[in-house]
Image (tube, rainbow, N blue to C red):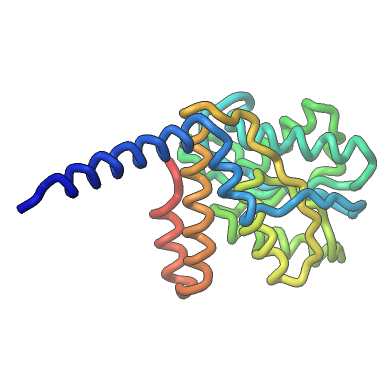
Length: 223
């Protein structure tokens, strides 16, 4: 048996695999790959800004992870421009830290610390994941008579969230939070892990029943 072609194929495969890993880990290739799945920013004046709690990553301040902090800062910047009158924070305690406040309450406290008046903040405290963020927030929005809103979440998370709200009949104006650290090994692979979860979740919504979705989404969720 002539093993030379197999050796050559193995060498080519090995170098190709190393190159792909390096490109994914140290370049902006993950963001190039993700572009077709991400909504572009389209902020328009609305009654309210809806901000999703994340609950993943390292705690930065007030028991909040860095992703939630970034989302709050984005929402506050939009509010300061006079593009919305209210902020709706949505999210329960999904990060397993056993803290007293819900994610939305902690986000509200941080927004108040940044100068947002408490009286313009609305809380949705029961949601355990993105799907319930949309379901429970939609109830509040409809009670208020608000058919359109500005949506703030991370760029990798935006498309799935927009789709969920649109199913409930809302006009959604995306205000995605862009990933800050690009081209760093740990940051790149964290982004890829979140992107993997988003794509798998969107597929799950298409092919699974509601009962199956609950089990699968919890299983797929990044640590």
